[in-house]
Image 1 (cartoon, rainbow, N blue to C red):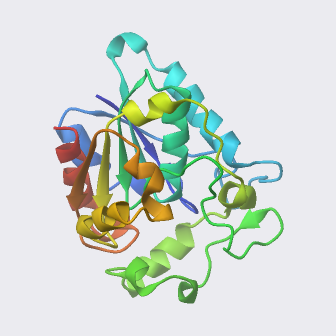
Image 2 (cartoon, one colour):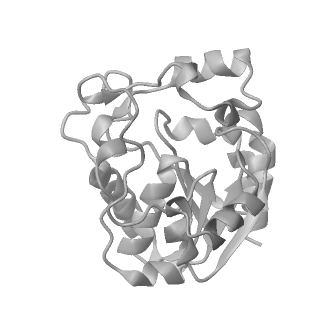
Image 3 (tube, one colour):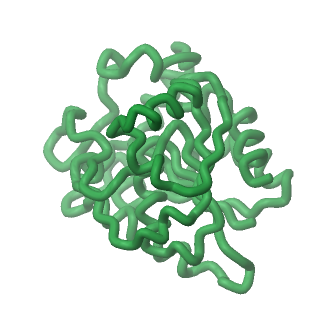
Length: 234
């Protein structure tokens, strides 16, 4: 299976490095992506918005040989919003979307427009900005590594509105790997029609895998994350 690995804010393709061995050992082909403006700390991020990241992934899907079958999208954090938009743009090409501590972002939603920006850049904020649940298992060594490797995201990626047009996206099967909060809590939010899970509630085939840790399991539990993704693919 072709797996496209979509990083969240502040991350590039290399942040999947410790997850990939488990995926390749299971026979999958992996394609970790570095999205536009994320090539380096000094990259030009002016003019780059959420749709530019979506379109970059759509182009990559289109570049893969359709005769090899459909592809799986794995989206972490804000990368989940991108994955959902790609499923909307190419519902016939997507076998499954795996959300890593993430979920589908509905039409008109934004990833997070409350994060502090610096011009066209959205740098990794101080740890105090995050909730305690985000930082579980992210010890001092991992925090230092993360901050050193972090790349400012284009500010508009977090604040632009999601645009979706094809309801066939709801036919694409989904697996949610729940890290910060258990899947039981997500299911409870769905029953309460919470805005956070409203788009997820419309998807016809949803499964859950619990991986208790913080918001960055590719750093805190990379092997376990790889195994969870393999399990999601059956």
